[in-house]
Length: 411
Image (cartoon, rainbow, N blue to C red):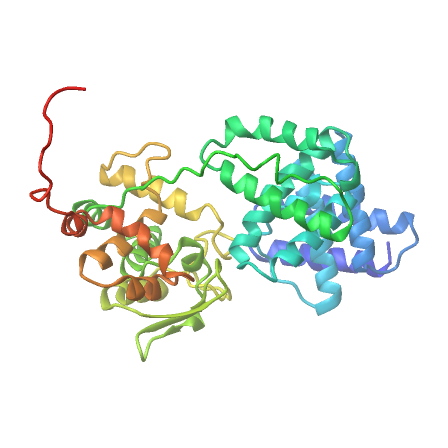
C-alpha cells in the first residue's frame, strides 16, 4: 500500500503510540486505520477529502445498522478517518477525546434538516439553547426513522402525537422542553415549505414545566467536602482545585473543564473566559484560596504535557477531561466525605454553583450583581437562588396582624 492514505495511517498510528495508550488500544486503531486504507484502495483513491470521509462515515453507519459492527467499532473507525484527514490538511494531529457524532444514527436527509434548523435557531438563541433544541429534535428525527418516515413532508400529526406518547413517561419534568422544541421545529419546516403540518393546536395544552428548587450545599457540607480531599496525591490536588474554584467563583463545570492556562491572569488575579453555555465573555476575580489551589495543581500535580487546558487527565493521553468529570468527581468525593447522596437529589457539581449563587444573595448582593458574577444572560435567571436563601425569604413575608379573622371553624 504505497498510497498517500497509507502514509496518513502510519502518521496517525505514530501519534497513537506516542501518547502512551495501551497496546490493545494501539492495536485497535491500527486495524481501524487499515480499514480506511482498504476503503480508499478499493476505490483507487490516493488521498482523502471531506467528501471521501463523509462517504466512509455513511458506509460505517450502514454497517452498524445491519449489525455487522457495534457502535464502539463504528466510532473508532470514524475517529480514525477524521484524524487521518486532519493530518493530511494540517501536517500534524493532536490526539484528543472525540465525542461520538450524535447524528450518526440519523439518515442523511434528517442530518441535513437538523443542520439547517440548528443554523436558523442560532440566529435567535444562545449556543446552549441551540444544543438543547437540537438534542430534542434529534430524538424526534430518530423516532421518525424508526417508524419509516424518510422525509419531513411525510410526517403527520399522528406521528407527532405518537412521539409525545412515547417520550412523556420518560420525561415527566422535561416535557416542556420537548413541546417548545417541536413547536420551533415545525415553525421552521412550515416557513421552509418542508411540511404543512401545524402542531400549535396539538401541543397547545401541554402540561406546564415543573421547576424544582434543587438544594445547595450548607457551609458544613462544603467544609466537609473540601477537608475530605487528600491533597497529597495528584488526583486530590486536581479535585481540590476544581471544587474550590467552583465554590469560589460559581463557574459551571463545563467552563472549569475547558479553562485554559492562558485564561488565568496571575498578575491581576483574574480569570477571563468565554462561557460555553452562552458564548458570552466573563471576567471574574480569582480568590487567593482558589488561586493557590490551582497553582498547586499546575506546579506539583499536573502532568507535563502540551495540552492548553488547566485540568487534564492523570494518565495517557494527557488531554482535556471528559464531559462526565463533574459527576464522577462528586460521586467520589461525597462518598469519602460521608455526605449522603442518591440519584437526582441535587447534590451534583452544579450544586456548587447554586451554593455560590445562594451565598451571594444571603450576603446582600442584589440580583444584578449576582447575575453578573454568575454570567447569566438575564437577571431573572438568578432569581431562583432566592428560593434557597431562607433568611431573605423571611424578610419578604408580610405580617398578618392587619388581616382580621371574620369566621372561625372547620370547612
